[in-house]
Length: 352
Image (cartoon, rainbow, N blue to C red; front, top):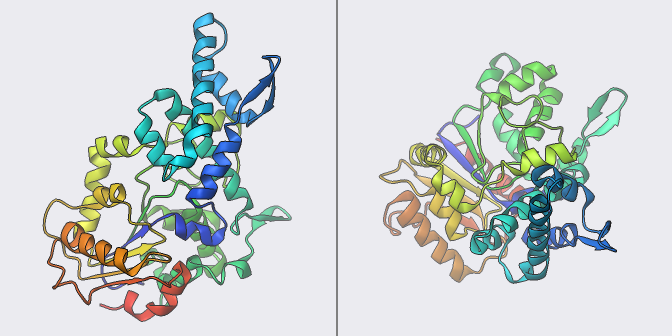
């Protein structure tokens, strides 16, 4: 259990530890999904069939106008395929195009790619009799295991309702791996039934600034629901409407206020697998003084020069104190994987 208000800020590098795709790999998957071609103008010979079926549901094909709209979106898919390699990420690409057909096709491809990756990730449940099981041994070298241990240490079953005290999760990823993991880990560790575990995890705060590929069946959510790693064309269409661009997130003032309030009231921030892109830090930036006293984070593969730039940005824009004041309070490890952070700073994370 954590003693001070702590916000975990989670990026793609964190989900990578269980086999979810990073930016370059995600772009490659999206290119393949959107390489939609037809033979003799009728039979689809490449690209993803569920995506084209979801698009048919969205546009219809009954009138000349609907066919034209369908074809306009297929052209948007081809543009993504041809140009996405030049973009930093699929998110940046969509933001820069300002084209509704490109945006629609990108969102459909994101949902398909992420859900597909969930089904092959280290968290993908294995069916054992009537109950799906998770291969807990495969998670020992991931941050999911480290997080669970910091949350559960010293917390008996009688006090399980306090499991998420002082903890908030802001994840810039579309997947539901963290929620799925915690739901099953609590059941397995404490011997609880699914309803009790659902109540506990639903009491936690999970914020996805850019949306998700749907809600899990047990979550308290009005959004379309589906099992982890499962998808059909109907769900694909519905879930794609939950994906947000940067502009859409900035326009959602209620969500933005919730994020910034959580940052403002935190005493400790923990960055996991983040690339510290300006657009994401802009979303986190509070509008006045914060209570932040400590920042821990991974910066694997980021140069020392860039880490200094990031520390300056975090000091001035997020913490809103001078860099000198925060000099020894921002610890970003250029050699730390997300799992390593929980071993390197296990006691620090749970300290007052």
